[in-house]
Image 1: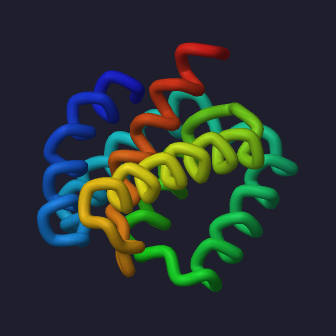
Image 2 (image 1 turned 30 degrees about the vertical axis):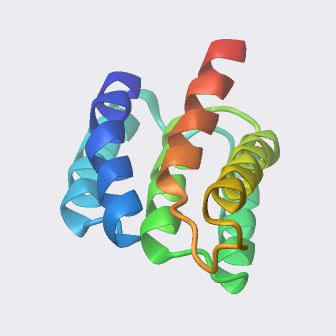
Length: 129
């Protein structure tokens, strides 16, 4: 699963940075791979699934894009780590991304592509765990 995620990280991030939209074709491919992964390894603890669902619902309430929510949901379902720590890592990378964009364009951006931060957080979390 990690190899597929890292292979699709580049086109998903490029698409998100260009149009602020993650095309459904990428999330569909990841869904099929995730279903195969879940078929072999299972979902994990029910507590992590519930916490992940609550965190994703909160992110949806705050206006995060649905492509980002779907991508995060697939990652959280297929990986057995703490969802709170993983989301905190992603939000840290997103904050750094916003600061860098503020330095480049000299104003606060209204919309920020989250896919690069998701994959940077995933790589960091995989490297440290």
